[in-house]
Image 1: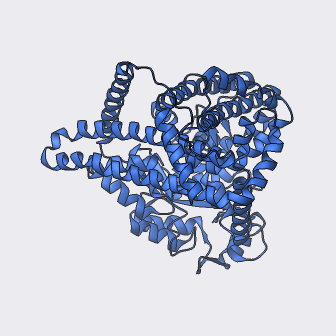
Image 2: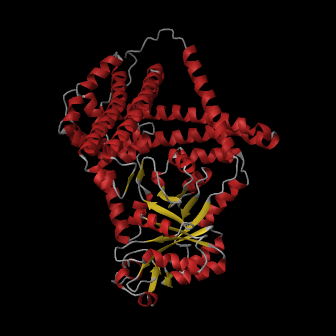
Image 3: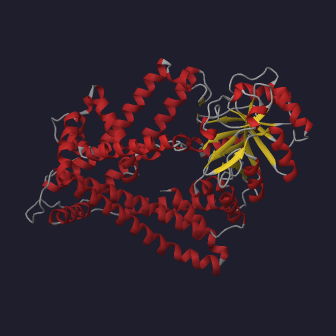
Length: 589
């Protein structure tokens, strides 16, 4: 424990003594990121769309988009640009820590030049090793380096949900996670070694990191875990103390709550940025100290600070604080109005029922869902069955393809899920029960390629016969079919399902159903301007439901309609601003 104590004391000492250097460096990093990296990425993407002729990228056109020569070259450019940014950001901090621990005087220009000497590695075979390294450390980097570009990189939930739906998928997923975590942790010191040693390659750095981690890996991980824990506790304490005035004023002087809430959020945002920056600096100090251990000495070099003028810095901080406060007050004022987001039960209510069954339909209606989403396919005899998968394997354990079977054959089968059994039903069965329960359906037409030519007219006639054409919603992942359906039935609410979307959307349908990972504030605003409704799927986390209901999207598709209804009810009751702040803080993590 002696070495660990020395490392921690050294890290705290260096960050305090070089505090002005860290303020300047972090300010430059953020300035460079927001004024160059982010705008350049947006410009390059717009240029790719213009050259290829696409308006936006979806799962239907992403393959042809990605193989375009210009797009390939631009993506390679962006990858190198992002890698360069990560390399300079982290490398700068590692070199600063190294010089500080050795008591060596340094200048920013000298560090910049040292990092520049290895830039050629990004235009050689070394880029492959850097790509592997970043990919391995991505989960860890997203957590302990929240100010880097890696924070915005996430895996869409529908992919992991699909993998986790089967036992073999779960085993494969956990096995891959374990392997990546082990390899990633063993490679954690590769970048400090690569940036500090002037002549070493990244491949050799990975090997050295792997060898080093045999000795002090557990100690290093213990210190990193302790740093993160301490940060979270400090953040919790500051949050409790800073929100106490708001808690009192909301109850004693409600008229001041809006302004107080805006100021409180601005304060917490700035404090959290500072704390995360300190954490990033501490982690760089600890990693360098473990790699190149230098005991703390009284004779070491201590920086001589000239008398600095803090007035400009204080002015900048005050300006940012006021600007954030005003922005937060405006945002909170808009969110005071009760959201009217529709709660859509995904495949019925699957908790306690099998998906896409009459039992799930009844449970979802009893829970109070505004809409109930069901999946339909056309059978070989031209009928509509309520079923999601193309095959029977997952829910029945038997072989069989829906498109090759009759409705009568399918209705005799028993389906199983989560310890529950039920029967397959027809669309007619669902509509009859839904009408009796006075609830509307969101029907998703699953296209398998063997539909009859009159599949859309048949569907329209069925909805007309049940007199639900004006109240039901129909969606599909096939845009052409939905365009045809809209022409056939102008009064029917028709939508397109997208698992992926990048860029602005310009559709002629009534609504879009989009996976949550691709829904941005800009897209929400664009959809409202075009008067196209936006449904977000599939939201099963409290945080996601809070977020999109607060943003008042037109609908959230969820397996947990009861939870979603409770969240909407709270926001409809104009919950206290303190609760809104706590919800916002959840999104920051």
